[in-house]
Every structure is written in C-alpha cells, then in structure tokens.
Amino acid sequence: MTFLLVLLSIAILVLLIVWAKLNPFLSFLIASIAAGLMLGLPADQVAKSVQKGMGGLLGDLVIVIVTGAMLGKLVAESGAAQRIAGFLMKIFGEKYITWAMAFTGLIVGIPLFYNVGFVLLVPLAFTVSYQFRLPAVYVGMPLLAALSVTHGFLPPHPSPAALVAQFDANMGLTLFYGFLIAIPTIIIAGPVFAPFLKNIKSTPLKTFQAEPKPEHELPGIGNSLFTALLPVFLLVGTTVLSLNTAQDDALGPIVGFISDPGVVMLVSLLFATFSLGIGRNTKMTQIMDTYTEATKDVSMILLIVAGAGALKQIFTDSGVSQTIAESLKTWDMHPLVLAWLITSVIRVCVGSATVAGLTTAGIIAPLVTTMNVDPNLLVLSIGAGSLMFSHFNDGGFWMFKEFFNVSIKDTLKSWSLMETIVAVFGLIGVLILDLFV
Image (cartoon, rainbow, N blue to C red):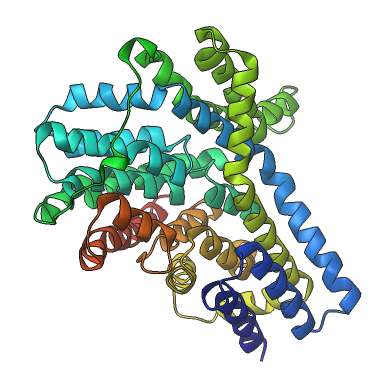
C-alpha cells in the first residue's frame, strides 16, 4: 500500500506538470501536501514538514546556486566565454572542429547554467558552421552534449548540487568523479556521434547568428580560463586539503570553512568581480546589474529545488522513505542502477532533468545509510538518468529544434538520441568507477 501511495503522489506531480501545465513549483507543493495527507501525517504536521523541507534544502544551496549564476552571467557578459571558444577553435582547427566545440562546451558550461550556455554558445556554433561550410547539427552537437553533461553531472549546477546536499555527499569528490565520467561521455555523445549527423539538413535562422564582441574588448585568454575554472580548482583543491587534515587537527575548523562550497563560490565570484569587471574598467553598478539579472535567471530553479525538498521531507516524516529503503534492499538490482532507472522514468514522463533528479532523491535517499553505496556516485547515477531521452515535454527539445530549424523527426534522431547516449554511457561510467572507489 505504501508503494501505491508514493506512486500516486508522483503521478499527481507528473499530471499537474504535463497535463494541467501547472508551474513545477506549485505542482511540487500540491503533490507534497497530497502525499502528506495520504500517508497519514496530521494536517498541521504536513504544513510544518513542507516548510522544513524547503528551508533545509535551500539553506544548503541558495549561496551556491545564486553565486554560480552570477559568475556564469559575468563570464558571458564580459566576453570571457567568447574568448575561450575562439582560443579553442584556433588550437584544434577545422579538422578537429567537433573536439573544439566539445571542449568549449565543457569549459564554458561549468560556470554557465544550461539555458544561458545554450543561448550564448549555439550562435557561436552557427558562426563556425558558416565559416567552415559544415553542417550546423554536426558542429553544434558536441557543444550541446558537453553542456548537457555539465548540467546533469557537475556541481555547482542546481541538480547535482542539490543532490550532494540531500545525500550529504562531498561536493569536491563528486566534482572529481564527475569529471572522470563526464569527459569520456562527452567524447562519445559529441565528436564520436556527430559524424552520423552530417546529412541532417539544418538552416539556422539569421536571428540566432552570433554578434561577437570586437577582439579588443575581450578579456585575455589566461584571465578568461582561470576565472571560469576557479570554482573547479578551489573545490577540488580544498577537498584534497580536507581529506588530508585530521579531525583533531588545530587547522581542522579553518580547513572546513574554506572547503565549504558556499565559501568557495563566494571567493570565486569576488575574484571574477575584479578580474572580469572592475579590473577591466567596468563600473560596479553595471556589474551589480548583471548579478541582478542572473538572480532572475535562477529564481524558478530555486523554487523547484525548494518544492522538491518539501516532497522529500514529507516522505521522511511519514516514515515512507525508510519503508521504501527496506523494501528496495530485497530487489535484485544494484542501487546505482535502480536510482538511474527511477530517474529515467520520471525524466521521460516530466521532461525536466532537475525535477526528475530531485524527485528521485526523495525516494532513494535512505539507501545512502542502509546500503553500501557511495553517495557521490549516487549523485552521478541520478544525474545521468535525469538526461534520458529528451522529447516533446522538454524545453531543451524545442530550443534545439527552433534554433537549428530542423524537423521533429531529425530532432529525435539527433538531440533526443544524443541525450540518451549521455544517460546510458553516464551510467556505465558510474558503474565502472564503482569498482574502484
């Protein structure tokens, strides 16, 4: 009966988003309240659980997500992303154009949220396509594969960062493991897959062609690369430092402070404010306007994360999470595969990678303590599943179709298949890594 009630709760969530076209945040709230009442929580406790779940998860994440959005926006507005893309194009040349696009998507995609990265970098792919007279889908697919992988696998992107918080994983380790899986996954879904798409007809609209900044207005390549990748350097570096510092060491509290993801992101943002802003004679008011715009870009993401936290707390307070965990232990399936499978099903039904990942987290969280599973790998397994088979109910599907101006059939053959490759090979990478950690 417990399973049926949980499935009914998720069905309500899916129907509200897909059929009723309700905002995901409102859908999460309604589904959470319905789940609490169906699972037997007292009416007054339901509201408290919703508030506790929202506040608890946002408390861990709001600094990381907001500062990450601000950093990404500044990287885009300053021209640093354009500089990085141009630099990589010169290094790889026409022969290895797909590799250049993949590396551009990986490096620039780390600080940029997916939608921002898509709108910013796809026009650059069109420019390259026109310059070298190559099919646009062939040139753009490696770029989009990299953006998808960073969005699903790597903190400080919202879904993996939220999963790290929910599973009490280590953000630095998750990022390190994520890179080990992300790079081969991007290669397979990007440069290896792209040649099969050369015959897809695409006539990108002139509206979406890039209007690059003049060369003299761009920041230097060293400045651009270091600033964009500083969060990665700091997260990995402070994680290594914390792993090599004993708990009773006098420096322990200091190391714990500087390795906190919120502190890392704040330091990275302050550095970027100078390196890409004040240091290049940009007025502080203009920089702050950029940051204000960035918060608007992620406001709905924050609300969706909060809503997912509410549903997770309902499952926890009602005791259903523990019941599910005990039941799942009897299933003859690896917990990482199980987490991936549940996420994939929700993703195909709902369309949103973030909703799919966070909904699965509420169901699967007890496995972290009751079964022998690495929480960092669990984050990546769910991240891979959250990218499975993007289709008609996913905004990314329609963005690709309209920007590249291709048919629905060709969108399924290219975009949807690429996302499926990312999901499947991401899981394979997680399972291989599980053999060694």
